[in-house]
Amino acid sequence: MRHTTLGAIAFAPVLIPLAVVACSSTTDDGTQGDPSSPAAATPADPSDPSSPNNPNAKQSPETTDEGCGGLHAPPCATDKHCMVGKDCASLSCQEGQCVAATPTDGIKNADETDVDCGGAVAPKCVDGKLCTGGADCTSVSCKSGTCAPAAPDDGVQNGDETDVDCGGALATTPRCADTKKCLDGADCTSLVCAGGTCQKPTGTDHVKNGDESDIDCGGTTTGAPKCAVDASCNVHADCASDGCGYTKKCVQGRSCTAHLGGDTCGKGEVGDPAAEHVSCCQQAPLSGTTVKLDRFTVTAGRMRAFIERQSGDVKSFVATLPAAKWSASWNGLVPGSIDEANAMLGPYWTNAPNDTDPSTESKRSCSSGSFGGHTYWTPGDDKQDFTQDELDPKGLNCVGWHLMTAFCAWEGGRLPSLAELKNAYMNGTNSGYPWSFHDATSYNASAADPRLNHQFSYGSPDKPTRRFNGTVPWDITWYVSPPGRFPLGWNKNNIEIAGNLLQWINNGEYMIELNFSWERHGGGATSSNWKTSTAPEAPNGYYAIGARCAFD
Image 1: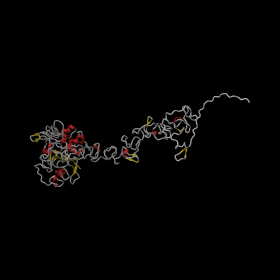
Image 2: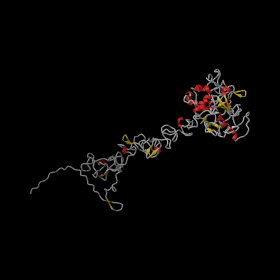
Image 3: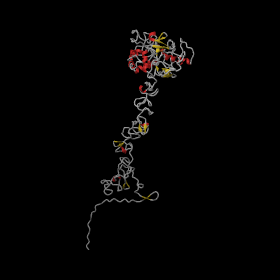
Image 4: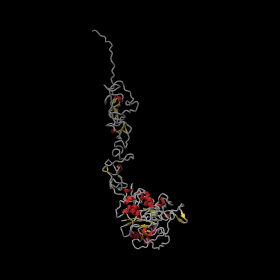
């Protein structure tokens, strides 16, 4: 037999991946464990430089399994062989084998938007992580591909918000509007949450909401009534009295909104820490009647509040009054401007339409020189010794009957009658003096007495700039007291009815009641016609005449 010699044959090298033999392992209890089970396979830490799943791990130029893996082939599916994570579609190579992506493998894989977060399976991502939409983020807010912190203007309900961009505890998040979701009233602009929904404000929901100025009162949008005295207010219209005071509380009368002359009546002087002051608009009942009377005569400050509220135009106000309360023939005797008001309440008022001699001043003893003076401070050439702040608390003098009639109508009342003042003066019975119900001590009408301002028994404030003619003060407003300073003379209903100023009454035009004044005028609650019997040439005010109002 002939033998043939074979020539050299060249074989192309083929890289055949070595099959990884899964060896059994022994568990802590000595039993054989499955190395492919989750308990046996510990995910490789991708932050470890030596880990196959480290992003910087180098891929082989060759495939790691049939048609996949390596630098140039597609990544391998689960259970295929691998050398590094990038060989796998899951980017996770554990012990040479591609494993399924999990939300705890430390790798951004599957549909995750950042490492182990985002997508349909992994937890939502915290702020600062990558995202494709709000659903990927714990904040539900994805801005420019990054999870953003919850914000009150991000257009989604997040954080502790109870509805979109409202509710919750953060001060920067606004309260929710009506009909939005809520957990409690604090989530709502209305402060009322019922059935998980913010409710519309009402005037009966027991909270201050809407445009109310206090709980279930004031404002115009909730149907709430006007507010009682001492309730909070924003404007006069919030108050049943139509008077919102300087402390933003409703006051007892619409003319008692300022401090000086508004709440400075009673015992003690302004600034005295021991003073016991009350509202100058307080009223008290007349014994045996349904009528109430101002406890005190009207202050200069109360008249100022009236003039300022009307911008001086009292004429427009009286034009609204019914004929039973006002005669159109009186219109010329009330002001139409601030300047006219200053003239009527100041020292003179010449050319008054009711003056029998237009060349005279139509007022008596109201100039602050030569033993005269008016408590309503006016600007200009009138040389008063006292400032507006010093005068506003005092009883108003030098005011005309018609202006006081208009004032009381504006306050919701009227001038009292002689009978009503006599009732208060005599405590509804036959008391000799207002104070007789508790002090029967005789009264000497020709001497000063601490029970009332009479016979020059009051003087304030002392100041070195006061002018004198010898020992006589030029500005007599020093003698006019703020109402309420003589509590020993109050009647049994605490009305200061006697002393300080004579008073206009409604028994007829120019009628006054005589009940003692700071000067020497007598008492007894009798009446007189000021214009016809006392001062026909000066009908529009006197330094010892004031007034108070009565209320039916």
